Amino acid sequence: VYTFTFTAMSSDAEAYADWLKEFGIGSHNGYGTLNVIPLQLSRKSTIFLSEKEKDKRIKEKIIELEKQTYTALIPPLPTAIEVGNHMITKYKAFKKTIKSRIAVDEAIHVISTSSEFNFDYVMLVFSA
Image 1 (cartoon, rainbow, N blue to C red):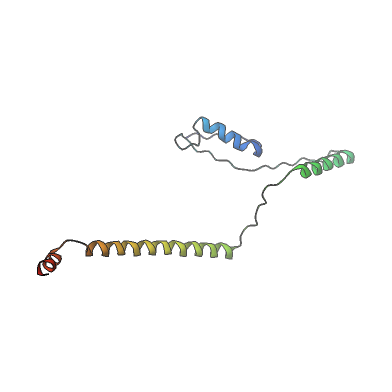
Image 2 (cartoon, helix red, strand yellow):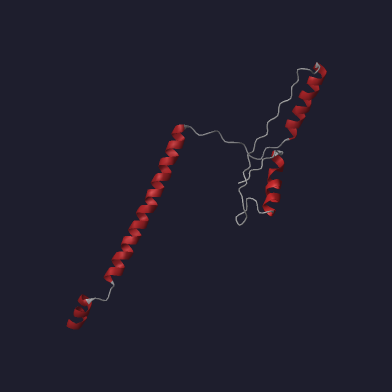
């Protein structure tokens, strides 16, 4: 098993994933697994900068943030109670599907056994 790790800008991650898929990496009929870990974190030290340079960087950062458009906001993390309620709801829905499948299977079984050509049916037809 080989593992390759490289870093890239998060905005380029999808392009890299498509490029690697052309070589069969991470594709359904290919080989390997492709894991993308979206993390972009950078900090620059400003300890040795002058006040003028610090102000300049702050203004640049403000301008950069104003230019960015966010298409989707990250929803807040659910609480433990919300997660528990969600799991209970999913479990109940799953049980209902199992109950309905069992009910359908029983109905099919009853219908198929009552529609068999057996001795009782032959005697009923013969006596009629």
